[in-house]
Length: 174
Image (cartoon, rainbow, N blue to C red; front, side, top):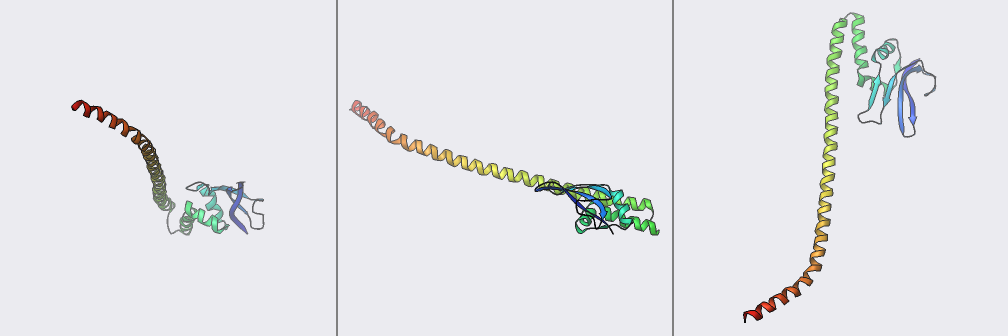
């Protein structure tokens, strides 16, 4: 049996995966028939580079994806493309209609991805503004404490000088 699965690479705690077609009995990181692309789950959003045409060819030839690769293939539209291609093979639709439907699906998907990226950027910007606001409040509190400390120390020294200045003014008035 031929499987479409992930082969791990990358360093410790920073995994990257190759999407490969391999015999089911071959080891996870061992021999494979063909490399279809890469998957990087550590980036946000995840980065997937995939040769859709090769993946569809292997699916049509009977390769079975694992659960994780099935979700990746679905996310990238490979399963949708395979579904449309089966319709073309059976004669239900023409190749032009299938390509048109796939492009419409792809544009809708791109819109959703861009919305998510915009939301992530806005979320990061809001978090940064909140952090700067918190820092500003802490700095103002420190400045107020320092100013209060100096005002308290200067006030007793200023009062006797004010009394001395008031006393000669009273004597001169008499």
